[in-house]
Length: 191
Image (cartoon, rainbow, N blue to C red; front, top):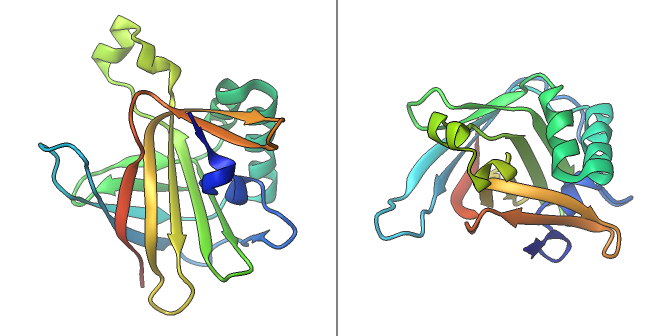
């Protein structure tokens, strides 16, 4: 398990502190590109495109956090499924998958911390065989963009994830289904 409080993967984004505030609705879609750096020998760097049509509202963020605190992954998934898609993530040239949650926090250091989440696609084989990976229904994406006009940064994707709120650390704990998060390099905002 990865304790996200130490990594600031989602805690700073999903649970903003007084120094960080959620960002108002985007006046126009925001687009980001990145390279998914697959760590297997057979994997090759894969360009991805992320489009955020609008940012989640404070109310939507609260519903997602409350679901997570009360019922863990199941509660977060239930909250996400009630939200309309707010954007998409795709490999370059493909239709992609809808994103249901997009939250942006600008820290006191000027770094934008963006958390995106959705229910992950489940294939026919996985569904019909009721395999253990069905217990990991979320895809969580984290982007960190440096301040300034270039808007460049890094990020990661946890494709098959489970999350729960740990009251002992007052933070979010992420568990991946035997997979490490996929690092994202060359993350940048496309103008």
